Length: 282
Image (cartoon, rainbow, N blue to C red):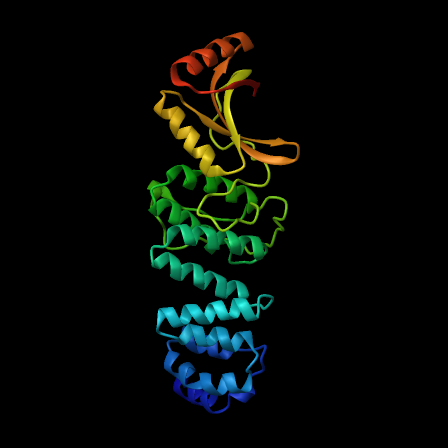
C-alpha cells in the first residue's frame, strides 16, 4: 500500500497544493525518501516559488553541504514563511555537528531573536547549551539554563552531569518573550548579556553590603573578572542590575554588616591585588 501511495504522488504531484505538503512529509517519516526524491523535480516545477518545496528538497538531499545551502536559501528567500524557523534550526544543527561551537551559539541566538515565538526555540537552546558544554564553559551553561528557563517557563532542560542530551523540548504554548529575550548579537564570538535583570544567577551571600568590582553589558567580560577574583581567593558572584534602563551584569564578592567593614576589606584588596572596587548595598 505504501508503494502504491508513493507512486501515486510521484506521478500526480499536482494533486497537492503549495500549502499542503504533508503527504510528502508522511512519506519521509515512513522511510520513503527515494520516492520523494524522485518527485522533487516535478514538485519544484509546479511550485517554483514555494518555500515548502525548497525545504523539502533540503530534507532529501544527502550531501550535507548542499542541504545547508538549500536551508540558507529558504531563510534568504522566504524569511516570513512557515518553514523559515525549521530551516534555521537545520542550519544550527549542521554547524554544531561540524564542531563550530561559537558559530552555533551565534546562530542560536539569532534564531531566538528573529523567531521568538517559534515552537522550535527549545532546539536552539539545546544546541546553545551543548556548544557551551563542549567548550567546557560550565558557568555559561549554568547561566543560560537558568536564563532560558525564566524566559520560557515551558522549556525542559536536562544537563545532569553536564552531559549533552539528545534533545531539548519546549511546551507548545507560545508565550511572547519580547521583554525577556537577550538583545540581538553582533558579529562576534563573545557572549551577550540578557536584556532584563534576573532575580538571581548564583546564590548571593546574606548581608547588607558587598563589594562590586565591575559591571558589564557583555557576559564574557563579567565571567573573566569573576575568574580573576576566584584566582585571588575570593568567592565572587554575578548580580544582574538595571542602571539608567540599561541591563548590566555586576561582579561582586563578600558580605559585610557595615559599610566600614566592607571598605576595609576593599582597600586591602586594592593594595595587595590591585583590584578596584565600590561598596554597594545588596
